[in-house]
Length: 232
Length: 102
Image 1 (cartoon, chains in turn orange, blue):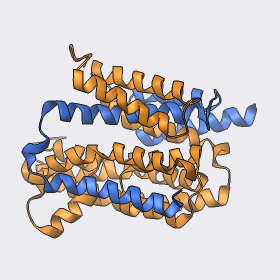
Image 2 (cartoon, rainbow over the protein chains, first blue to last red):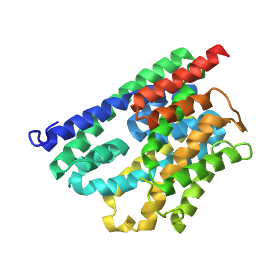
Image 3 (cartoon, each protein chain N blue to C red):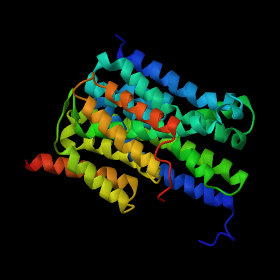
């Protein structure tokens, strides 16, 4: 591609569309898994329409699937903890989005991993804005549509585990995690958290091992352990 | 005990509030490097823990089954830079195939 002949805004459009379409598969697996974990089609669609942050949505249904309604508190906490990164995304996006109540309200809902990543990868402020909105809107439309499709399929199929969709959810989480594993510190935290969560699974109520694993991040982050050099 | 709707609505309100918060706070408030670092590592820790529980957990027990090879295949495919959608489908196919033949 010859960057000198293509305006940065067009590149941003393409990046947004590509990322948006690629993440649609997410919606199908979320919809199907959510119905498997005991949600009805309305509840599943509500999560994608309102919560709209895939990591938290998968966390919520994952905890409900293993612990049932008794694990409701853990489910809410897991979703909230995973959603905290969006605060930092919003802070970064605020100057890109500009002012205006409605514009900021719409932007807040579309502030997710992908829209922020595409936006921050663009060279100009204008292209950053285009990248954010295109990615956010394409994903919002696509993710909600595919969530509905997935929920209907899940409803129809019954036991989704026979089709390997439980493994697909783990693979989807891994896809979210993978780009974050470039540094020694994040690698150490990932391994530590996985070990803590696995070891605590037979001991604690479902949902709590994941929250306990968050302590690994707090300990390593506050003391800045394993921060020698990046292995990128 | 909360009902399913209560859990969903409460969690949704919190997640939306977190997104909105970043547009409301003065930018300097959360720029301390330790706070930013913990936030980043929190995401990593939770995702890793969810992968572990989703792959090995079965209620309150740890169980090795078709999910583990499926996730290992996914890891290899991500390392080979295979696109996300393909990896997720491949993991589902591996797990389904193992279950069909065992």
